[in-house]
Length: 186
Image 1: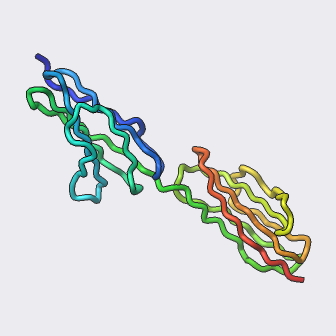
Image 2: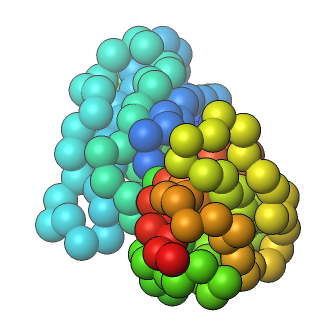
Image 3: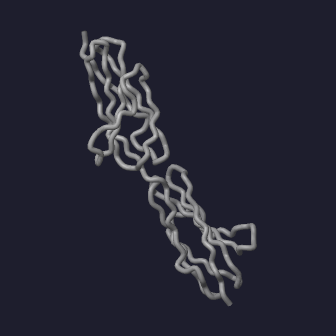
């Protein structure tokens, strides 16, 4: 009879917080039927948390609650109570955050402001889109779209409030946008 072998896998090695991963227990050798136990812990955690105790269910869908690096331990037990554990690594990235800023929230007519695109989390590289409009208008003007540039300059043409919209898109296509109001004085 061959030794019990654990060839368990994760559906992904990297996910973004809020996403889920499927843990799949796979075994060969030993004496079937097999049961599977799934556990997880972050490197800072003192011990593993049991996600599923020994059952015949070979898959477990799991959504981590925090970002960081996790050790996922999948243990297979055969009919004779022999066990084989396999530890896999899962990286959970922080959600995409749009940290874009305006150089000022008030400007004199004829002056301009610098709009700086900035993001954390998600999956770099990021692309930035910059839009602006008079607050009373419904249509946006485009300053730059899907650009790698992290800043643009906008010069308002009227002494009215303006809306400035910055959209960040990460390499997975996740989008986070933010809108600021700019006061333009005579």
